[in-house]
Image (spheres, rainbow, N blue to C red):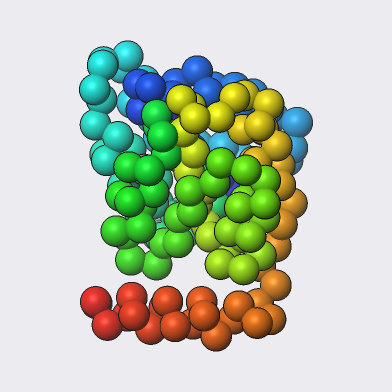
Length: 150
């Protein structure tokens, strides 16, 4: 069973809840790291860091982060060693995030895309698998650069 972490800030609670409901149709264990306090300007970096850390520690295989644009969540998640988070606002990017880059996390913006596209992005990403191939040396190079930071 796939274990997935999800998190959102105050700009994306509704989208996050919609995605959680959508995921019920799949055999996926979903853990929500959102604070859900409803406080305006909730600190999305805290949510993104919690999800990315949980994945890097092996608690989950994949994660979804949603804020207003998805940009901030992506930046924060990529600060965690071992994490590759990709901003995806279309299904092609979601597919390539997984197939070419082995991204454990996708991010997107609730103020950028609508609910049906968000569900399609999630479905595409979840149904895609890292295939290595020509991308394997590139992902290995990413890991080399990251390991220099340890």
